[in-house]
Image 1: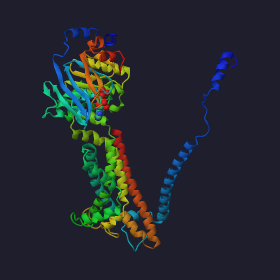
Image 2: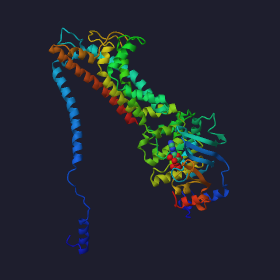
Image 3: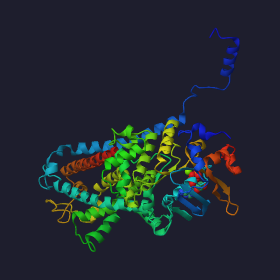
Image 4: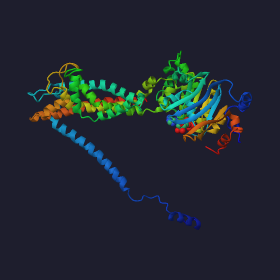
Length: 307
Length: 287
Ligand SMILES: Nc1ncnc2c1ncn2[C@@H]1O[C@H](COP(=O)(O)OP(=O)(O)O)[C@@H](O)[C@H]1O
Ligand SMILES: [Mg+2]
């Protein structure tokens, strides 16, 4: 500094005196506050979930054993009673939902995104309809399922697949909305490139749009399956029996029950042992859910890597 | 007027002079002829009365300020405007004497014969090989040996040496310039006779741009090329003919409608343009 000339020093001084400031001006209160609120929200959410899980684990702990998965329910021998028919019933139901909701939902989404002319009033009506359908209470779908699926015209009777179809109606709007988002996210430049090479609309949809949308469609499917697996009310209406001591013969034959229905049936009984069993049942449901989701996430990761 | 043509030309110095002597003002052997071509987007009149003819094995550049309808005209030539629901085309576009907007024409057949390269490189998220093989596969081309076809298309696009060891790798891993050359390879794999290019270099760096320009000079031997560019030096460097478009406010509707101002040999357009507006644009006084 000392060897600077007077002129240099004056100039430097002048710059310092002017308004150029690079130091921090105190704390950014609004910014920090916002961050704190966001963090709080996450912590609250995770905390609630963790508390629930910890509580059912603690309550169900005495009955967390293999019998839970391998034994029939019983109201006599409570120490070995299990969830086997409910687990099998839930698996049947969920498979039924999967094979119906994915083709229906993806097709509907493809129609709305790729083919429908949004100028036409009926296409706009369908859109509004689907959005509102997503907000209809599940019990209403139960009534619908009872009236049209269990009884005439489908007249399937109280079988697992009737439960599947009822839940399919329930989660179809979610799958459609998520699939539409995924389809819309496929870059239009890829569609153009494909069409410019002489591909037909159908080839473009099949080779570009659907593969590009698979990860998003899978995400929507995970969400809706997770919702469906825990539904109780509509299943009670369409005949998921609360107490069965045998396995359903198949999706289209025989009486069945599902895990949430079984839990419901046990939790309303007064004895402590039933409550413990119900808590353990919640964990069975959670485990099944996690298994299902990990398969979907693995699939999604595979597809995203390819593209 | 600076002579941009000669100074930057990547092709041999004699290229323009020898050809120009033999070239008439209008192409003798046109691949495309448009007649009173008008395009509307809904009620908006985007381009009016374009009469152009594009010569076989020539490079024709479409230049003009942005929004004057260059891309719109280009998309008319392979019926890509069909994909825009509001677009409506009036007038005729004849391709080897056939009206491609004729009643019984299948736009898919048109697009197989007329390839297109877009502004932003848009390879499919697939392997390099599958990108090139896509066109032949979807159009059901009878291909005896797909490997040979892929190799010749990549060689034609001056990309083979760079990718021959990684044909199975995802095309997204290539650089921008390589991706654009892959898009050119993909376009020529269906054996078109015309390649349309819509500002193919605007997303590329100067070196990648130079490579594409060299490639265009090469492709010209086998293909008819029509290129939209907003880069006048590029038009001057690579093209044989240049069409200059401009926008004019239509008094009745207030639409800013694009129109063809002048069409001539590139040397003529850049050295002694006939129209005042062309001269203003070329010399940078406008646009
Ligand atoms: N898909 C479209 N829908 C409505 N108007 C469009 C569409 N594409 C282009 N236009 C309009 O048409 C005119 C010409 O556009 P374009 O052909 O893209 O010009 P250029 O390529 O010369 O920049 C512009 O006014 C533009 O806004
Ligand atoms: Mg353009």
